[in-house]
Length: 87
Image 1 (cartoon, rainbow, N blue to C red):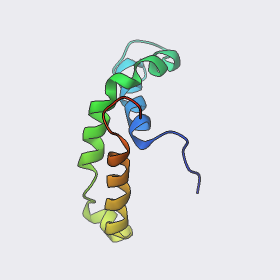
Image 2 (cartoon, helix red, strand yellow; image 1 turned 90 degrees about the vertical axis):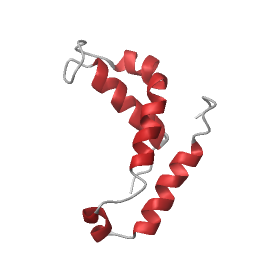
Image 3 (cartoon, helix red, strand yellow; image 1 turned 180 degrees about the horizontal axis):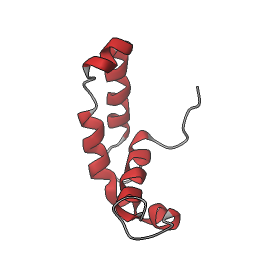
Image 4 (cartoon, rainbow, N blue to C red; image 1 turned 90 degrees about the horizontal axis):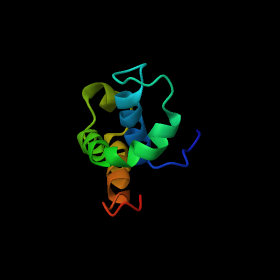
């Protein structure tokens, strides 16, 4: 299984930024890679909210695997972000 070099929080923040900026989503720009690189940091609070929401698996997720492992993994991603901007 591949492992990302970016934190879960950064990946989520980048998706949120791209969703906001890209003409393929809600935005207005046809290509937003550079803008996402510059702006994703402004989406960290929203990304953290997404991670906190995902702590509890739904029934489909629970039926697919170990819920305790899922919760520990999401908690680790949340704990990795300390709010200082270093993550």
